[in-house]
Image (cartoon, rainbow, N blue to C red):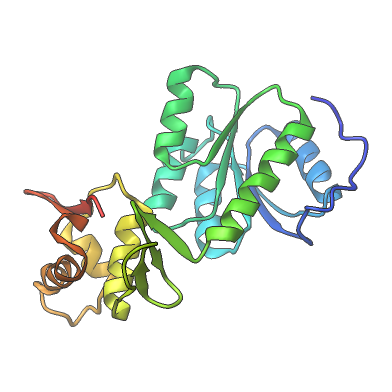
Length: 232
């Protein structure tokens, strides 16, 4: 792993926050020093359980997650974060470099995958690229040919007029769109989007509302399980 000799990259954001989840003591300490020197504010977690807690309770520009973690394995940690609606970009940093390993990490929800040993220059460049993409699209999610604008609560495309959504419609669509391959039970969606006092049919009601506005295929019913994102 080569040490970066200069840090004059003008693209680097001022003091971005970074969560590093790595159990190798020597490597984690080295990365904290290198990343801090590059202007990152680094939080370190040495196991998956601590990493999960910090990721869900803190605010980060980007995360670096190892795979072979104690308590909660790295890929499982990523899946849990994405299931909770966490959209911060994640880079997997691991010694596991087979094609199957890479596919598993990316399918779990990671945006990038770097294999050890690595060059620090490349790692830093990949982190900057992740931050740029996230900054450009952090308030929007792709829905096929359309996009969900969470700030203005609407769905828009290049050719059709914007479709306005209610707050709950937007929240429900966001949870599904942020985790497009995951099936959510009705109870999970009810607990995340709606109030405890809402009746048991509230999820079905809002799925109906979204389908009426955006088309029946926008949300897929998985019989006996729940719902997941369909084709928008």
